[in-house]
Length: 189
Image 1 (cartoon, rainbow, N blue to C red):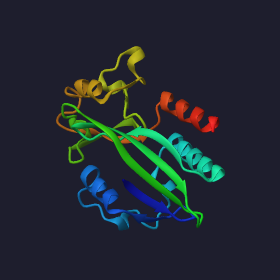
Image 2 (image 1 turned 30 degrees about the horizontal axis):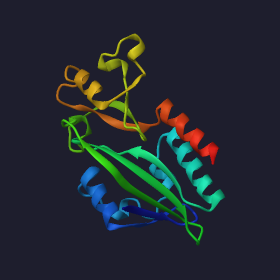
Image 3 (image 1 turned 120 degrees about the vertical axis):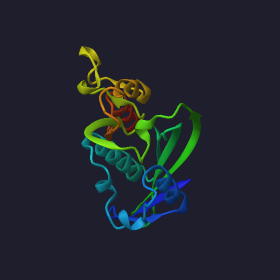
Image 4 (image 1 turned 45 degrees about the horizontal axis):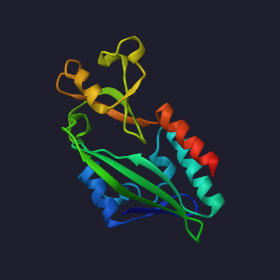
């Protein structure tokens, strides 16, 4: 279980060893807790749609005074990871964020997801929840394909001729399907 906690002001105050190990394996090998401890959890999310969904999760957990869970994916280059995040209110007004892997599926290596891959100045938007990638016009998308959300393998097959050995940097957002599904789930409770 990957656990972090924030205080009542939203500042990250705790990361367990499993969380640190996961961050070092999947984000930055040189990750140190000081990079995020003391900062607000909201500062870690740059996309407005994703931040809105996180705000809804927190509001629901606090309103119900009960944990709220949501499914998401956190893929590595060679694995599709299906996970669950549970946001729980703490007695002191803070929050506990606990994630766990529900299942993993091996796949051919998606070099685009390698944290050490050489990057270009271009950006690809990845859904924070399902890990689909929004097809950019510069990746050879035609007409109705541009803007569609597709699996990373589909985008990778089109990047070979456009990147000259460097992959675009990744930014996160929420695809329309995930955004709507989470909105509906939060409104239902």
